[in-house]
Image (cartoon, rainbow, N blue to C red; front, side, top):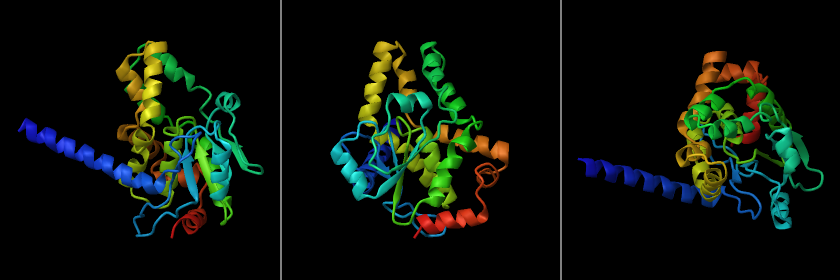
Length: 271
């Protein structure tokens, strides 16, 4: 019985890996100086429409883009850049941008993130730290309201990228809220979120190794910090529902999206 169970788990994991490989052929943007750079398009909504391709992209750090990378962004008409990092992160590794890019920094809640690694170094439970981070709604509105404002104002012939440092946590929350506003099912939102484990696999392992060797953090805690888990995103949505009544009410009353704004988003980003 145990062997059957292990075989089933292996088949499931293998199928998920193949699905990610197939998906990345359409979604991943191959850049020399950035990882986890991918198209947020193509997802089906509850009403049978699809998120438009080549309109909204998500990424990790953009400070190391090459000239060839910048040419690729230009070819994709990416002229809006929403940076979800804190002031210190952005100052230490400023984005490399094409001329005339509309850039905005949305630092709410990010300048205190160094406490996470400090807590890990103090041998606090990594899963608990990440659950607390994801379950904290204090900064959500201030962080993502400017993001939605840019989405609403994006010209029809241009595209937008949003990112943080790793492109998995703050970016993952932003992608989740964006896709939710368009009517994408929650399981699909989770799949997009957890895909960072695939897109960041090599980079995450490097970060884990560095935390273990340089900060003496135990390997499992370092892995939990670098992983993206459904439970983390669930914590955000659970906290929003508990504090604001529903995600729809949060988008309406905290982000400031009227019914007309939601329809505008769907008109701009669905087909």
